[in-house]
Amino acid sequence: PSSSSSSLHATSSTTAAATLPNINSQLLDFNGHKYYTEVTKPPQEKNSLFSPKSNKPDVILIHGFGCSTVYWRETTKYLTNAGYTVHALDLLGQGKSAKPGREDGVTYSIDLWAALVDSYASSQIRGDNGIVVMGNSLGSNVALAAATGDFYTLLGETTPATTTPYIASKIKGVGMYNCGVGMNSRNIIRDPSWNPIQRALLTFVFDTLDFLIFDNVPLLTYLLNDIVTKDLLKNALIGLYQCSPNPESRVDDELVDAFYSPAKEAGSVQALNQIYTNNPGKTPMEFHKDNQQLLSTLPIHLVWGDADNVTPVTGSVGQFYTALANDADSNVSLNMIHSGHIPFDEIPECNEFMVQWLDNVVAAGSSSGSKQTSNFFQQLFGQ
Image 1 (cartoon, rainbow, N blue to C red):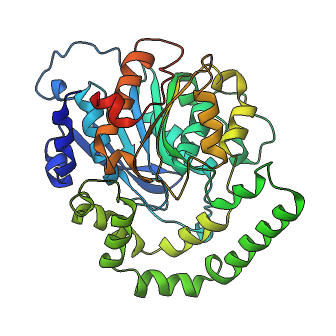
Image 2: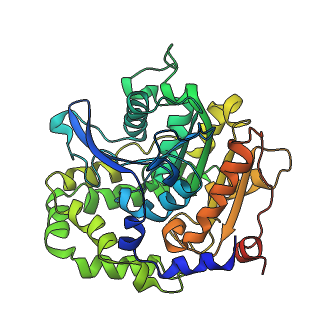
């Protein structure tokens, strides 16, 4: 890419959204609850009834905790400009989607969200050229569950379903930005490097935090209703975007509102309570172990920010994928960039890495990607 890509740092999300063609948003039903979706088609399909048939897979974007379709604005622009149809949705309990609770028969989990994504794909994507799932943070765990069909425990099953879930039958690749350890941080306890005493201490810490804060519904209600303000969220987001040349420009009103408004909706407290305290689901390492045949051959690409303190690349998940990416024979590739937890919106140019992987590996039918893990500016700008 030319150095002109760097001008995107100063592009407001309002301008970016305005340049996106063919955006179709709608509310769909999942088990009696509405969830928000957006489909964005490539520019060349906007005004042509006779567009050439594409060989490119559909891409589904899956956000992380407390996020929504909004922060995929730059990723969507890069992917659609490269000819990909992009599907983004707000997971149940977050964004513009409904926020049911246990009284509605809903227990939040990675499995639940993977089932929602699979339900969406089966009804909205023909998948003639396959499907790529792409996630950030816990959205990466949802992507792994959806790609493998490994969410059958949602129904209380102890063995996989006899029918293959829809995405698993169409999957062409998995992309991840700063992959999480699970739905919440409790999966840190399962790191095999801990000894029994350390694991017991961590369990005690998490149990105490749950008791004092995350299972304390009156406290959570007070925090969300009376403490969380737009200014507080804006300052927190600017802190997450510190690697951007202009964090204040990237953290605009649209982004702040995308975090603020859902937090004020009825049901947000119950959703927050469950997400922090429910079973965190499988770790990425467990997904690979339990689905070795697929995940050892399926193209997988990661973009990871080296300044991320939420899901640090030095953690167990980051080290797991770094080791795979450094293995010349593996199907995993990784680009390390100087950014935080949301690299695709903080440093929009890094989305070009996913485009290159999609073009050169997934759409081209290759079984493995580039094994380079070079510095972002060296590889992207040749500096």
